[in-house]
Each structure stands twice: as C-alpha cells, then as structure tokens.
Length: 177
Image 1 (cartoon, rainbow, N blue to C red):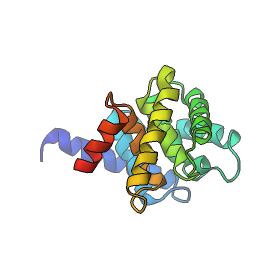
Image 2 (cartoon, rainbow, N blue to C red):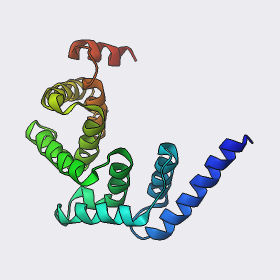
Image 3 (spheres, helix red, strand yellow):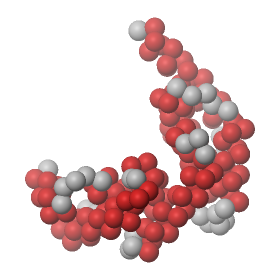
C-alpha cells in the first residue's frame, strides 16, 4: 500500500476510535465513521472540546425534539470543519430551515439536511431564488413520480436548483436518466 494512503488509513482509524469513544452513546458507528472520514478528508485535527462547544450551542438554540439535536454531534463536526464561525453558521442554518418551511418544504426530518445542503452550495444573496427553484423542481418530480419522490429528495432539489438550467430542462434531463 502507498505510504501516504497508509497514513490516511491510520489517521482515519485513530480519529474514528476517539470519536467512537467520545460519542458512543450519542451516535451510531456509521455517524462516527462519517465524522472521522470528514476530518481526514479536510486534513484537520479532531478536538472533542471544539465539537462539544458547538454541540452545546446547538442544544441551547433548538427545542428538545429538534432534528438537529438527534444529529447534533454530526452537525457540530461538519460546521466546525467547513466554517471558521460554526455557531454563526448554525444560526444561518436555522434561518434557512425557516425559509424552506415557509416555501413549502414540509418534511421535518429532511429539512435540516436540506438547509445544510443550501448552506454549502448557495450564495447567501441567492438563497431565496434557489429555494423557490428547488421547490418547483421537487413539485415537478413529485407530480411525475409520486411513488418515488419524498422528503429525502429535498437536498437533491437544492443541488439541481443551483444549476443554470431551467426547470423544464432539468426535468427533461431527469426523465432521460
């Protein structure tokens, strides 16, 4: 095995063991593996205190039954890895989720992931346009394939809305696939 690949694999294993030890009762092994993989891919060091700090912020700013609380360690790690100001970005994430809800995105379970997808892929000045286009795409998907389309397609609609193609063009491409 290539030496750098072996180093990456060792780093992944080491971070996974630490995350799994730290959050064994809060996350599944798959979530802990995703967190470890994210740290390795970003080339950053894992520090439990940082994750705990953001995790505490998430808990203080959400209700007891919030979907963010169910995956708070994952969201904490992802925000830490992608932004220098994770608490402020979490506030933006909550704002995006409210906008998604107002614009018709109903599934409570999938809205946090959809809001995170929006946070990662959309320019803040174009969020409202992206959400409107995404909902139009989702509605068309649902109309054409009601048995295949559900809330787990929300993040996909956000990604598709980020393209320059028109909604009919996107739908034509979806149908051809």
